[in-house]
Length: 628
Image (cartoon, rainbow, N blue to C red):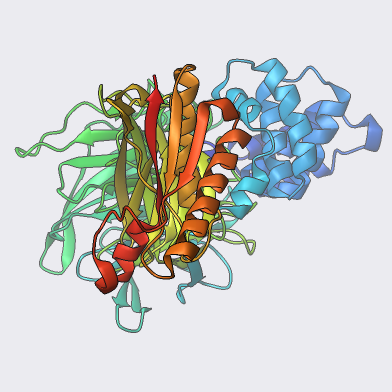
């Protein structure tokens, strides 16, 4: 049912006459009135195998596309292209989308390559060429949510667009009203707005009833409600305000989707009024109100739209007036269709798109507006599938979300349950100048110093990780020309965590006769180079590469446990393994001297009363400049 919102934004019709009854005109009339089920039936009667007129193939493809019959849509797009490869680029894009929605990713990639030749500057082309085989990455990324059925779905029809208020009332859109006239687009009843009560303790929904004062004989919903519960914005048809275009030739009235405002009076909604930025020639829909009530996000194809449909926002002024609608721009919108925006209380924008790197159909994406320069992220499995996944809402204080999907062949509402993860944003900057450092390597290690993942800072100097909450982690950040940095991260309860890694330029590491490195520590009674040790020694390698005449003495030490003789031999082994590591990294042996000092020069002179931490500090290698 959400396809009504996407392909033509309802392009609502009131029928004033009868269709014509000769050859394609019957099917064409159904198609022109957006009765795609009936149109497909009539076009099918005109199929003649290889002799089928290509117009029929295309009209069938478009009909099935609009009712999201992915298999049949892909079939007829393929037939149309086989007959005439010179079709418009958008036909190829829709064909690729239907192939992906059917799980045929390799063929979809072949079709996208053709689309790229036809639309070389299109955002969708550039994104595809940058990473054509992104599906394995999407499938393997960390799960952010699990899901389960909401318990309110009807076995037939559509339920979607769930919005939960502060007082645990869930508003949603449904075709469950049995007595209403059916809508020709998909032969389902018209949409109505419903509400249910959410039991936070049981995480269940009950007491379902229609919001009768809002509903009309046309489509109504979805809706959003202010934090104080006094104001509602909802989608409805423009017929409600007498706003439509009359097509005398086809004997129909053509309307659009509009946004209306209502206020609560007692237990009922009243004072319905259209927002001033509705229009006869375009639609506005899917409203979402910010927590502070100052900004309304919505979807529209109004003038200034980049593609078929974009996400917009408008200021709500204290005096009740509205600002000028603002397009969210290329950061969010594409040449395709973006819709179903939702702004969460922690300022994350969730929306759906059919034109970004997705699994097929509509996928849900998120943009964290609190992170400067953050990029749009696909929510991945299991929220997104090859089918349509959309209308995602999330409530951090309640730790619950809802989303809509047609993964079982109808639009249903599911609960989204967050996995306890930390969304980590690591910004790498020059400590001296504050400038970002693109390309910096950021390793993330667990509390046992095992490397979990290695990533590189993007053009913004940012690395993004998703890690388990309530765990200790260590970051190792390095870049050529800079001193690497180790950052220990204490357990985090989940959500967003921002970390800044400031790296010092290598030049500042050399002073007088010392090189300012962290000590290279060793495990008890061992001489092998550890992960921490190699990280520090790589800094020394950089210093010596930048100073080709420099010679360095390696001084290795032990703790006080064991005999003097044993510790001297152990420190010699540590000195030699340090030496061998540096040689393996390309430093000439002639520039290095290695010597063990046993326990004779403790960093912490604690004698026989050292703690484990003090012993660890004493087992080290350090470096003295012999020649600059």
